[in-house]
Length: 256
Length: 300
Image (cartoon, rainbow over all chains, first blue to last red; front, top):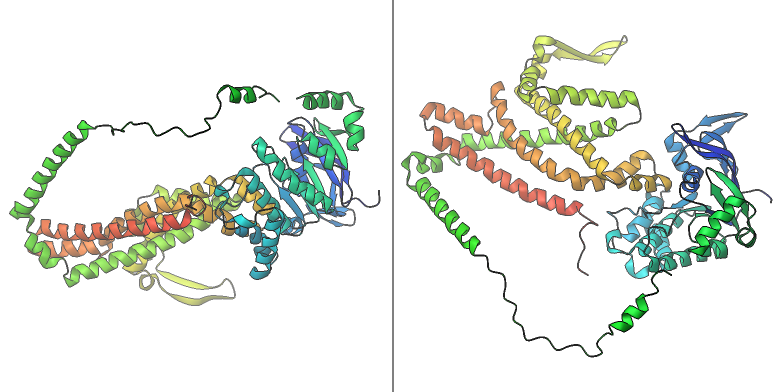
């Protein structure tokens, strides 16, 4: 337990009067795959979105690589950053969405080269080469010129993963990456993620795929009602859950 | 696990090993006798109208032919065209700015945009036009400079500055900007929120995301009503005759007030308006095609 890449302490998030996150404690080590499981509405996705500051937290601390994403630390003061300053910090955190969110007016290749060129200022030629190799890695060499509407859900999600990887992130966030897919397409996306995990990418995966969580996850955190109820290795959590709520949840999802 | 009955369903209706021979049926297309009646009625009406247009001497087609390419008409047409172009350019550029201001998080900026809309959409364009033309009555002189230090770097009479042309451009352009701002805003809102979110997650600044991701997709929704606005503007420019600018219609009016050939000269103007409108419609469909990228399935 040297220095964690992501460290959350007592993270609180409110929407109006509703407290969605009620003190989340969570750490992820470099190179680790952490899976967040739990019933819908438990705050898993909200917490994930707080990590790259798509949502602003209302309490607690949340650091990535020892760095506050939304703030600049000066002594004991945290200065809130402007949106554009936060944008720069997001470069190193890749994110994959449930609904893919590929840029609809751009081809697969254009989707992948967009951010490296306009955000990092990479040369077009370099970006194209990198993008082609990434698309090959996710098995889509033959579809580089297709628009998102011409791709299946599984293909779109693989392009989305390639797009996030193009920024050479230190951390990848996956927000229910297979929930919007037809059942027969889930496998191809999970294969790509498995491959990434094998290469040592630090990943936080919000998922309903218990099989994947069990196989690829190094740690599993079970969230319910805005807190991490229990976490541990997959073997431990899936075979001997300690908390009654974890047990209730697992018995429901594993039976199905 | 729930669809355990699928395999048995398959065995119940086995797939034919050999494709069945094509059945010997002939498909007879549905008949639409009503269509022929409608065609006949429309053909008769068209023939009657066309005949009267050709035969009725009051149309004075020879006069139309005489004036259609007359210098004064062509000069008027030119004024109409460039006035439309500049007013729309001003309208679109300012409209995008006001739309982006309107959705800003900063309440001051958003209120300023809303005030702009309220004012320029809420008063008749004719009034705005006359108002700009008579600006000198309100502010006879102008001076541009650095307050307190050099207040009169540039100064002169407002009457010299506000010619009929500048008044027309300001009046039509600012009014158009208010309408365009709402069109652009509707376009921006029609783009799925996930697009902006993905752009932010990739580290794009807001302005970059707007320019590279949101606006290009909003264009699909912005172009058709903008085409409408342009065609509307082409005809709205005719109100500049009130500040003595000779556009297409005013030129026609100048001639018929002298010759009393009212109908044929109005026909001349209409023919030109229709011609330009047709041209604009073609341009519009080209632009629409350009911005539908990713939304039309291409044949492989």
